Image (cartoon, rainbow, N blue to C red):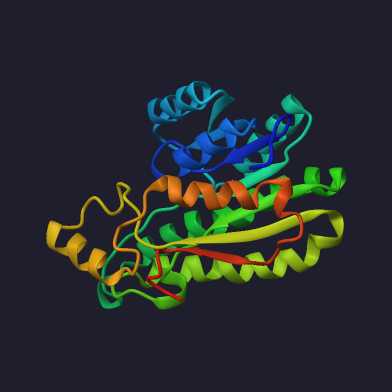
Length: 248
């Protein structure tokens, strides 16, 4: 992959799982990575340690992506401290899984606040520095659920589908400024979110995935690292599916 030496990246939800793998991949490629977390400062610190072990540099930044004021302050601190912000990876997210008729209003709001409004807040805050520099890479983490749907994930699916529309629309707005906006849509990935699946459920999904396995976070991180690199300068408004053929 093309080196990211000298660049600064912000990865939201970078304390564990897919976010940690993305942060380590970008750090290993030479970027200084700001690892966002909301509650798990210890886990974010472990991610920074992993970045350093991979040969990179990084720091942790605690803020809630759903809080517009906190996001603005955090991004301003990054730009003031580093003098630039080249890469934004909107990865922070969570899910409340239940059938629609059982879904509480407050859970619907919580899921959209983090998964969709968080993308809006972080991107708006980061975009000014990118437009001014006439260079930027924004990568949003969506989901296969945005395309194929999944029973019990109405809120999560709606938020992740919203990210796709957000990505494509913003890509048209900022392409002339040297900023690309893309999305990665993972399928089933071995993370804390899928750890609750029973062995029988995991066997079922493994059988229906043409690749014959559930993805690792590194599979997703590799796709994000490409889209975040100078090599992807002519790719924008694209949704890259990383699902082993589960959805085509």
